[in-house]
Image 1: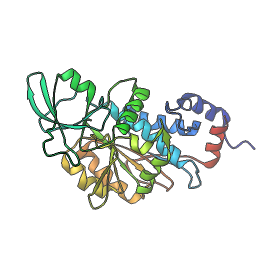
Image 2 (image 1 turned 180 degrees about the vertical axis):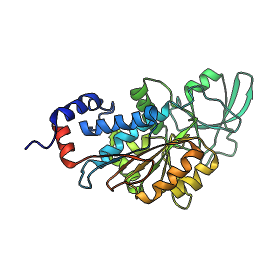
Image 3 (image 1 turned 90 degrees about the vertical axis):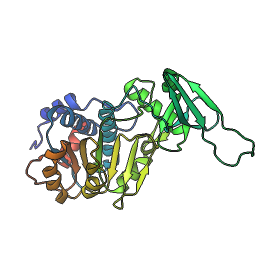
Image 4 (image 1 turned 90 degrees about the horizontal axis):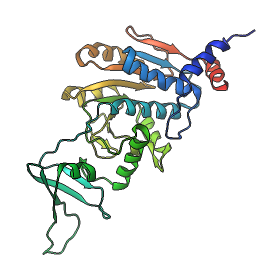
Length: 301
């Protein structure tokens, strides 16, 4: 007896399963369907959706990686394409052959004065150099950073945004951000996904907050995503700072924290999306439950 309606799954795969990522990360039709779900949920439908997958599903790491790529792309729409500068900012010189960080020490009209940040031991008479540049030159040749970071990572990030959005700049700041609630092992697993001769964890502008409040940044630029182990950490370390949060995403988290997230949603205005291997029965949340047989059927089409 035919238990699955093949026509239905064919239509689903045709409509939502054809958009593979542009980074050559493995992506099945099932994964592509769910990445389209997250985009529609967060940008069009504005509904609280949880996708329930079987505990035996073997491609969770790739599913999470592809969902995060799409989430980064969504959050990019909130980036500032025209950066603003303030005295005291630290910038990375992208055109220098050596590792060079500079501090913005003076702004006079359209003239910006950058002074080399001296690192390591220098001769007693060494004097840091000062560069005078225009706004356009500053935007094109220097990247705002929070603290020291490798130019190699910034170059890889530039390639990522070029591939995803066909732009030639790295966003300096994001007007709003997303929070991803997951075990740290999931965040760490992103370092095992290779993208553009780097790893995905190193390329997503993000910061991980531990329960203690300690921060761990990937690239030391303004993050698009925050990662936290639970909602309590998200509330204490991020939401109470009045930073604008567009979305909260839960990956394989325990369901008990969802009611509080729903209660706080009216105050903070975020969208909610989740993926779980556990059964979700919470008021205010719609659940799409996938069966093992459905996933196999979709991927076979």
